[in-house]
Amino acid sequence: MNIDSMTNQKRPLKLVYCTSWAGGPGHSGSSQSDRNLYRLINRELFDLTLVIADEKDPGEPRFERLFENLIKIQYTGVDNRFENLVNYFSEADIVQFQGGFDPMVCEAAKAARVPALVESLRTIEAGGLYPHIDISICISKSVLETQPEPGKATTIYNGIDLDRFAFTKRGRHDGKIILLQASNRVKSCFNLDEIADEVLSLDPDIEIWLAGAGQTLPSTDRVKFLGLIEDIETVYSKADALVLFTEKEAFGLVVAEAMACGCLPIAPDIGGPAEIVTDGVDGWTVCPSDKNEALNAIGQAVSLKKKDSAKWENMRASARETVERRFSISRCVKQYENIYLDLIKKKGRRIKRGPAQAPPAPEVDIADALFHLNAGRLDRFTESVKTMALREQPIKIPRLALVAQRLAKHVKARGRNDLAELIYRKIYGSGYHGADWMKEWLEITPPGDGREFIIKELGNLEHDDPEIVLLLAEESIETGNITKALDILEEGALKFPDSKTLIETCELLKSKIDR
Image (cartoon, rainbow, N blue to C red; front, side):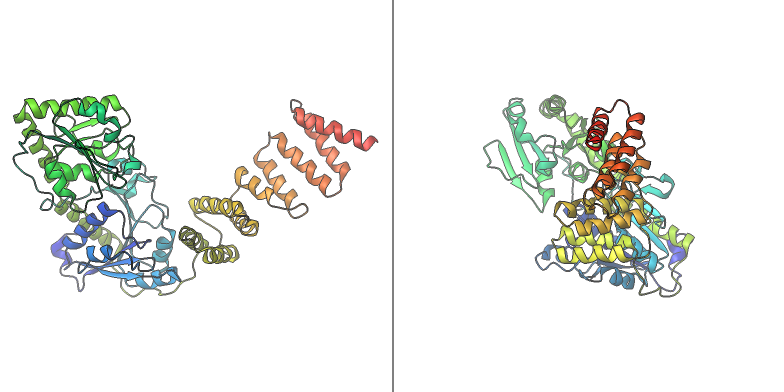
């Protein structure tokens, strides 16, 4: 469906973007990408709302300023999040959320009968958690390759604002060679200051600049720590080369931004950056954990800058051309618009308001429990766990059953065996079996209170484990049935003749009975 035909419709499509945390749709880079999308999307076709499944954070005014006058913002608050989401979604034609794990949003969209559900994947993870997700939009092909159903996924690269990240046709000519690292310090395999001696020895005119989270150590004349910088484009325009030594990058926004400004990248040869940079043409690619390879690429860049200014400028121009051709924000927005229009062409727009209320599934309670646990709201966490346990519906999504297992392990470590017991029973009642978590369940189950049942289930899962035989015998002893315990041990000794512990335990029990 093209844009001209859509303008003949009676109203713009109601498009709701949703995120589950008050800090905004993501880190500062993705927030800027979202801002550009909200700013440039065709308002004759789309009526935009941003719904945040959290309470408003009065300590984060930057977020409000970032999206001011661009999009309507709604907050669900921390109570009744699911009910409020269903209400907000009841008029939406399209809901887009940041995946790949948001059962609260997916269940609410299903309950509100939203015609089209879109997930946006910005990390290297599998999406498609719910079958009614219509399409997963991946930030790179590296993310696309991890999707369980590639036919329901596509790639849209991040868009760069070419006006903000402007290109200077001629680079600096003050003799300095500035190497910039703009990344979170803890995410790098190593940082430029950690190899500063080797880097600085390559040429006396080299300076190292480090920007980003954690880059706040004391500076020297040739190694400068800049910390977090809002107008990072000014730093790109001053630097000669950007280095990135992270092993896992879904896209590599800093790489594309730097290239737009004519700052040549030395970037990882894996993940998103490898899809952006062509080695030797508009930058260099290296193994991000190999210091020698990184030093060699830095040496190439420094030598080229010093000895062949014409080729250096050609590479800078190629870097800018790459971003203009493949990563402009206008291209990105157009791709999003086309996906939305194609979806509505296939699925149809909303004809009438959907249900404003619906009973949540246990997956919603698990998501809510995790949400409250991360925020330190233990009373609400407890309430969510108890509500989940009491629901008649089973947990249908396997990944949510895994999350429930982790929650049970967490509360068990906190000494809340009562909550762990509720979670384990719900998982089992939903049809899931697993030796690891059922052994943890066994640990908190007192004798005579279902232990034998759990042990038998473990025996069905692990046929060749003599430990199960010992557990069954121990259960019989604790309930006073010594004869049954001996029968179990003797049968087990025949089945596992190489188990020294089992045979010794059998002989020991025999000797005590003979006395």
